[in-house]
Figure 1 (cartoon, helix red, strand yellow):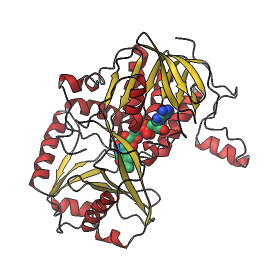
Figure 2: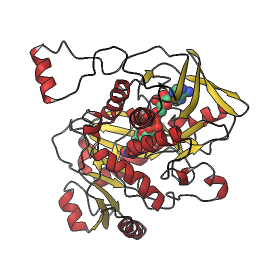
Figure 3: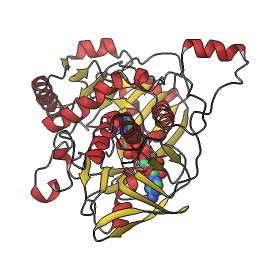
Length: 424
Ligand SMILES: Cc1cc2nc3c(=O)[nH]c(=O)nc-3n(C[C@H](O)[C@H](O)[C@H](O)COP(=O)(O)OP(=O)(O)OC[C@H]3O[C@@H](n4cnc5c(N)ncnc54)[C@H](O)[C@@H]3O)c2cc1C
């Protein structure tokens, strides 16, 4: 690998701190550097990452920081983190059922806890707790199973009864059409700011010389004798020794460009935010059996998430029947929401696997790696996903946490079945 480049722009990168804020305030804020450059692509890189969402940017950051890879570029077809990273409802938790998932999401959760300091950018990680409600006997059995599995994996969680839940969430209707029988609570879970995560990783990666190139869609791969040699883009051909694809809902489209199939279905997943109100909802509450979850943003908006559409589509809107299926139980569970105006509704295209676990993998093409299949729940995994993917690409061997998540599991049958866990 070639020597690591320095940040082009010569000035040493600024550190964000109370002192730099005070210093800049005295200069009427005229001395701030751009958070990242907008370079033109070079002819060749050691590693190209396709997709400038949170996962792609995190991968580039850890490649630059922790490996000996020199020239790195992130190619993004639109604007930085304008895909699912910008569209998600930012829930962070690590209470997954399977051992493999516990390791992966647990690794990510640990990285979240020190991330603002690591990348010198406030990602607003707020461990306010995540509560998953049980509305029937099946939900209660699933919660108990999770509780015991999490305990075995050393992940703290608590089974709560109706009284404790009502105390935590006074605005919850406990006795309506969806009675609340109990819940599973992870106190270390919570949320963070989606843009801050992407911008923080972008800035930190840029400071270490990573070229982040927006409006640079990849249209094909250069492949010779089964080995990837670079990518074709709307800005021309760019050569690379290795290519990592992190393109969420468009991963199967990119796999097809490389000549193989990725076992994914792409579907819209929608969300809403209400007008801002005073603080009234200080934890994240999920109702998986009715596919509704809600939290309150720092600005006061209620952030509401739905289930994914039932059919494959690339429209970033979400279907009306799913909107209806979300709002009806939402109002049953939280009657006060019926009096709020909704500010926005939108959707992102999520890449769903049959076992609801991600794919972090080598591919039939040598030196071409894919990281996808995060479906409805990849934001929480961003630091861990980027970290293990970066080390896998640099070493040419999958990181030990990533090994079980290879695409070959769909032929060997070694699935990591979070689909059966019904807590995704
Ligand atoms: C409504 C909604 C709510 C969600 N809520 C949560 C949640 O609460 N918690 C959670 O953990 N997860 C959640 N998710 C899932 C989460 O958003 C994703 O799993 C995660 O953000 C994926 O990150 P990414 O970087 O892989 O994808 P993205 O941010 O989508 O980045 C992929 C990038 O690849 C780019 N790209 C695609 N094709 C090309 C190409 N040909 N060339 C170059 N670039 C290309 C895209 O433009 C995009 O910017 C939610 C998703 C949605 C849609």
